[in-house]
Amino acid sequence: MKEYILALNKDEDSLSIVDLETRKEVKRIDTAHNPHEIAVTPDGKKSYVTCSLGNRINVLDNESFEIVKTLEHEDFKFPHGVGITKDGKKLYMASTYSNMIFIVDTEKDEIVKHFPTYQKHSHMISFSPDGKTVYVPNIGSANITVIDVDTEEIINHFPVGEGPEGVAVHPDGETVYVANQKDNTLYVIDTEDYETVHKRRLGSLPIRIIFSHDGKYAFIPNRESDEVSVILSDFHRDGEMVPWEVKRIPVGKWPGGVVFDKDDKHAYVANNKTNDISVIDMETLKEIDRIEVGIHPDGMGYLVKE
Image 1 (cartoon, rainbow, N blue to C red):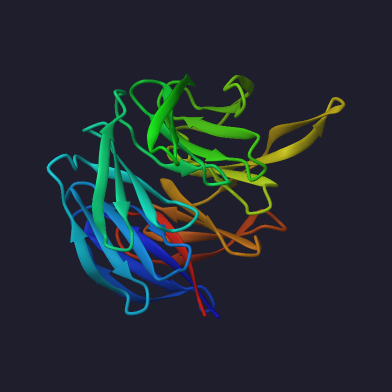
Image 2 (cartoon, one colour; image 1 turned 135 degrees about the vertical axis):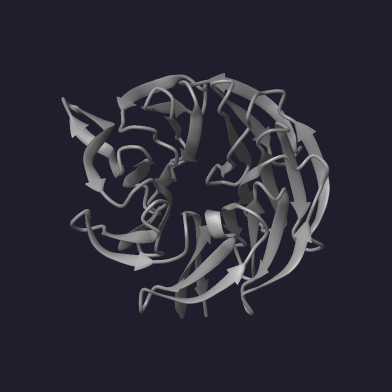
């Protein structure tokens, strides 16, 4: 079994493939212009790369590590966040400047549906753990759009802080975490009634949220303060269990994409302005290594190949 990171180098239009055993880049391939986000299929056979300024989605064959198809549409206007349904059959993509959601059939690699959010700057895609719900942060509307996966329709919007970008649902499915980049806050929201149950201060310009697989930690990269906020989801404080920031880990310049390995032993943080990936030991919560990649790495995917 081999473990890889697929790191998108935004400013040189490329994708770095990193072997996690050696912590070395083993291949670099060209993409369309300005790759931002990536989603790996559950079976690990393909990955989908949104190339935001190129207004394309590249389809990557994970066996050959070659681009095998490119998707285009007249309403691809800064295609960005991507996520794949639990059964692997559909890809959801948020197009930021057209404020639209696209759905792609991953067997045929064809767009099968698209619809507007009627919000401003719909940016990321995050699925609930059961795969039934999609959450889309709308940066310019200070809210989150909720989509039902079965009906493929919008069922709600709920308010959050200013400039929401990072969003992730806790693995227990009970709360959704939202990082608001304009007011540097974390909102924790109950998924039953969409009420905000906790608010926390973060570093400067928080842009992503990624949970460890066990749900113990949420990592939130703070782009302008060059650190990662570590949120312990069940911190014991004053007689109750609450989400709490327990540490800020210094990393490289302009941290962005984050992934965890399959056993939650390490986290990996893409540093946009130092052109490398920080390796975080999850026992010590300290940076232990850097991996050199291309220019301006941001979005990342984690891949396991048998």
